[in-house]
Amino acid sequence: MKPLIWRKSGYSDSNAGQCVEVAAHDGGIVVRDSKNPEGPVLVLPRGEWRGFLAELR
Image (tube, rainbow, N blue to C red; front, side, top):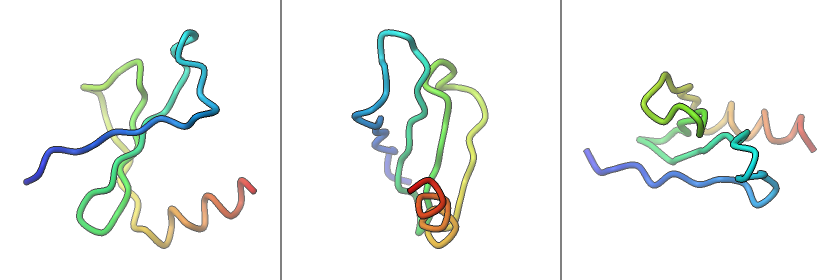
């Protein structure tokens, strides 16, 4: 398994530590809390991730 490459949004306030990070993984998207990188992750199929982003817009 390739290591995940985590990204934060440019809108995230890294000084406050209140960010989520996302990474591409096997046809889906993995989401984690940047304050707890070893904690649980949320795994979403790409279609669900796209739907989530569409709702945010």
